[in-house]
Amino acid sequence: MKKLLTAILLIGIGITPAFSKEEDDVVPVNFPKKYTREYIEQIKPQYKSVGKDEIFYVALDMLKNTTGDFSRKAILGNNLTERPVKIEFRDLGSINKDYASFDALGWKKGKRLYIFINPRHKDAPPGALAALLSHEALHQDEYNSLAEETYAWTMEASVWCEILKEFPESDDDNLHPLVDRENTLKQLFEKGNYTNKYLKKTVVQNEGYKNLPSTSPGFEDL
Image 1: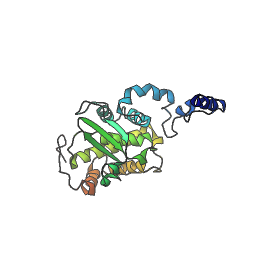
Image 2: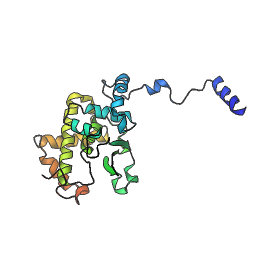
Image 3: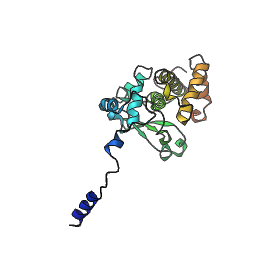
Image 4: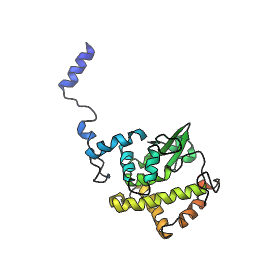
C-alpha cells in the first residue's frame, strides 16, 4: 500500500522524469548544422556498434569523403580483428598513471580493439574528434613504431585540413584543447608543404615515443 500511495502522490504533484523527450532531442550546439536530430537518428544504426555516445557517430560520419574514410571503415570492422572497434571516454590514468595526460589511447584486449578518449574532450567539436579517431584507428595490433606514429599523425593532420574545408565551424579558435592539438598538427603539415617532414621530426623528438622501434608490421618506412 505504501508503494501505491507514493506513486499516486508523485503523479499528483506533477513530478516529471529527470530526462524529458525534449531534452533527448537537443543537439549540442557545436555539432555541424547538417547533424539535426532527425539525421543523427538516421545514421545511428550504422554506427551504434562502436559505442553509445552520439558524438562518435557524428565524428565518424564526418570522415566520409575524406582521407580518413579508411579509418572510419576500420572502426566499423574492416580491421585486423574483423570486429567493430569500441570507442569510449575513459580516464586514461586509471589504466596507467603515465597515460593520464594522453588525448587518446588505442588498446587491444583479446580479440577486441578499443579507442579510449580522454574525458576532457567530451565537449570537443566532433570534427576534432573525427581527426583524432582517424589517427587512433590505424593502431590495430600490439606493435607500434616511430614510422606508425608518423603515418598516424600525418593522417590526423590531413584529415583535419579536409574537415575544416567541409565544416569550417569545427575550428573554435583553439577554445578547446583538442582543437589546439589539431591546429598545431595542421601548422606542421602545412610548414612541410603537406608532407610529413616536420611531423616526423616531432614524433622522433616526442619523449613518449623514445622507446619505440623505428618500424612495425605494415609501417616499414620511416
